[in-house]
Amino acid sequence: MSNLSRPGLIDVHAHVVLDGTMGAAGPACGPEIGTGADGIDWFRVGDWYLHGVPYRGSLFMEAELRLRAMDEQEIRVQALSPNPLSYLHRISPPNAVDYCRRHNDDLAEIVRTHPDRFVGLASLPMQDVDAAVAELRRSVVELGLLGPYIGTDFGVHLDDARLDPFYGACVELDVPLFFHPAPSGLDGPLRDDRMRRFDLDLVLEFSFEEIVTVAMLVFGGVTRRFPTLDVCVSHGGGSTPVHLAKLRKLAERRPSMPEWIRPVGEFDRAFGRLWFDCHITGEREFAFAVEQLGTDHLVLGTNFGGWDRGTAPALGALADGLTANAVRLLRLERRAPHLL
Image: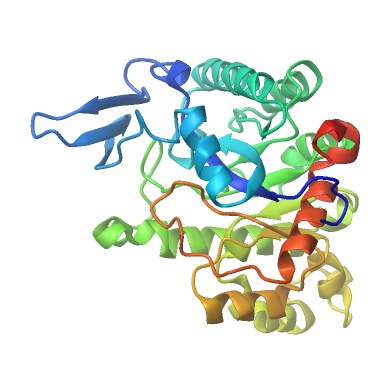
């Protein structure tokens, strides 16, 4: 494959649940895993419960099960990332710091145990920017993790200047930044109670958060202020491909837009700095997203083991390019050359 001496895909969208983090955010918040009297497994964060997902004994928590499943799907390397249900971006900063340190220590140990198959992406306490920067530095410099994997909503707009030290630290450390939504209402306010019906948060709320993330980063000038910052948004940017032309017209025509983005071509220049993982369900939907987003900044994502596992279309001729892109995005030639 391109840029690889050994065959196999590189998956950048693969969440992990770590046994050592259970209870690390305090007894009220958890997280906690258990089984009800009815025999149904549950996962708790604060007062919120996820029923029917057996994390224990699954590939989320058992590395050997994950490795066997990776072999079956010809995935040679996975970037293990935090479970979105436990970003915990809204709890008290001290508890968040404790939780993220435990998470990142345990994640780094899994990577050290399986250095030829896994790399790691760090959990950060984004409710305290200074603490997030400190944990980012520790995770990259001391633990060998390859960058941060965070939620999209933690009480500060993503283009707020208060986050510039965090973005600047990513640039200084030369690491990519990954955004992936979490359902609202876990450790903070519920955005819309309709999203709790029919598990709509897993589709509609996530898709909304992803396009808002794109808009904040582009219209808010983050990709312009930090032109060497590589930001990857999950699920092909949610509904971004459908609305890309309209976002472009917003940039060119609406008075609310900053002056710099109004000239024709400036939106595309700023947008073109973003990356996306291609965990998109449906052959036609996938083809449309690839057509809109292009392939230069597209990487493989699977949501490995998740509820929508196995729904991604066949990659076909895209596989080599997605793997080469992941090498670039994750800086594997510099940070993990043994994987190439």
